[in-house]
Amino acid sequence: MTHFVIITAGGSGLRMGAELPKQFLDLNGEPILRRTVDLFLSLPFEVHVIIAMNRIHSQWWMNYCHKKDFFFPHYETPGGITRFHSVKTALKYITPGSITAVHDGVRPLVTERQIIRLYELAEQYPAVIPALGLTDSIRVDEGNGYKITDRSKYIAIQTPQVFQSDVLLDSYKSDYTESFTDDASVVEAKGYPLYFCSGEKYNIKITTPEDLSAARCLFGREILNPDLSFNSLVK
Amino acid sequence: MTHFVIITAGGSGLRMGAELPKQFLDLNGEPILRRTVDLFLSLPFEVHVIIAMNRIHSQWWMNYCHKKDFFFPHYETPGGITRFHSVKTALKYITPGSITAVHDGVRPLVTERQIIRLYELAEQYPAVIPALGLTDSIRVDEGNGYKITDRSKYIAIQTPQVFQSDVLLDSYKSDYTESFTDDASVVEAKGYPLYFCSGEKYNIKITTPEDLSAARCLFGREILNPDLSFNSLVK
Image: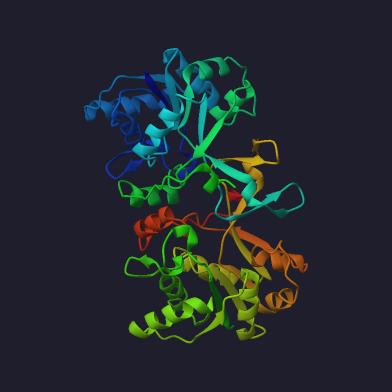
């Protein structure tokens, strides 16, 4: 089985208040994006890496790779206007009959064990989506202030989302709509079923300085990752 | 102004798979509950601490306090059947005209700066509730599978929740209903307005082994706590 990963690295980093886009900020000696790529390069099987990066950032990344002798068989795609367009462009590198993960470049804390598990599940299910129940109480504003809602009805969605490539290729033939917030939503709109499985609570998406600071503490540390069943996490 | 904190420590620890209730598990050399209490004892002003603890656990805690010479002016209340009943019992120690925080015993990572800010806000507002917008996409199951919902409508609620004590005392005269999931909900039901302000993303509630492991990495580390306005976090 051939394995691909599309790593989305299109962010501009505005929320970080930094000059560099957030995926290039330092995580204990290397850029966040390098840490994320390394996750997939260190698996016990080969994964073809495709980075979906905005063209205006690729010069920085190429300079970095050159300086570090970090050459690996990957492709870059010009970043699209939206995540949807970035992924759609990246799909031209995908071989039919394979398995493709799509992962946020700013989620460098997902474990190797989790990535392997998701790739394996995608041999059985067309679309494998990691998700977690919510720990805090939540409130929703439907127009008249924040009101309590039953948190047990909700799940938070993570990446990597892993797909049978033919499903992803077929789904991305669709025209873009605003309801496409992630790859799961694109595949679902085409009529394919989603298989939700347990995410990892500390597979955080680095979007604020607080996240980066926490990631610097958590990176490389042994975070327990109990193999909880989906039912124990989501009602 | 007199300041109180009611620290709820009623948990049985079943989700941790541990023999000890989770609030007594080790966090870098001391029980989690001790770390949480210390937060309030190290403020630049005096805070009267009340621990709402189940009677079956108080022997362990008294033994610990004795062994560590950890004596501070606090009260214990027998744990009630629900969080509501625990807090209601603890309220008998509260002086009218004061400010009272209610905080989860298993949230030892809230910063001193945040606690001070919440106490200050409660001099202006009857009920101060820390909250955060959601980072991940979320889905909701209304009976026909998990469907996408607009995450910008939601906030996650944390503690400490800080109240003008008279408001808390009045609100807790109510009879218990199942909709009382936290102190904010009790006060809101009595007709008082809630003031939502920014929570801290890594003020985590330790409920699983993963949380404990992460807390051990994060405890005592300098986590950035930018003073983001509420509007930047919640639509």
